[in-house]
Image (cartoon, rainbow, N blue to C red; front, side):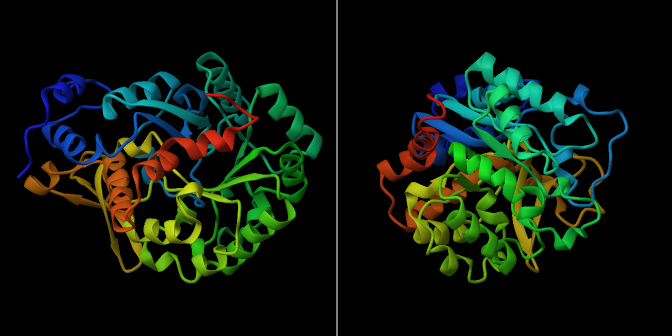
Length: 365
């Protein structure tokens, strides 16, 4: 049975807020499991900031990405992101690193300009969303002029002639751009491609090549290499145990087993908290079926999801018991941390200090 949360938390978590309605299940989950576990200062290394008005009214369907994230929030302007932290992580001071969302037919320059403006106005770190067609000179100029500290890119911007299942990391982060990032010691946020995810040998080989050939890049592997299910791991952590520098964020992932393996492989000083906001506002519980992740949500809350293999629905008491994706992610990491007996300093490293060290010389919080 859930206990009644402390009155101090109740007063900070607004039940009727229009952006994110907070209910008793959410309050209790946060108060009983997360508030004391989380440090006071947090860096969210992986967030998307964008405005719906910057996209065309008719969006392009992109078969290279899943469609369910668009159901959570049509946009996430900087004001909404900061308000989300206030509502969902009361009592914590959260600094995000921001970048645009996956292009959906909109003008990438407009999206990058908006993120740059938000970064300057709010004094928060930001990454450019890079296009592989940019030359080395253009890449460096755009990053410097926008005040960015590195780049994020995605398989959807790889050349259209490459079949989706055959896209490689270097197809959207080409070597001439990686050389620029290496020369400047910038951050590269890498969302790896391919159906095999983290276990894919091509991905692993190119991740290792980036570490070896571009030693000054501050490389972050997003989503723990998209290893959302136990089946996504294979021998990846045996291979990656040879690395010394690359970091892993665990955004939009709720697999405590994967988190535990990552912690054993690279240690808590190379693991970073990230949320993947705004999709972590989703009310859900993630399960796995036949090696595929499935987000279970209240029936009808996110429209008709019957044709989405990554979505399922619950009714009645099961639906009413669901809380936020963000809470489920942090809880899964808490479970992994408990299994490994991580100490308070380790948790502070993961949620704050590691990011501060990553920013050293690029940005000061």
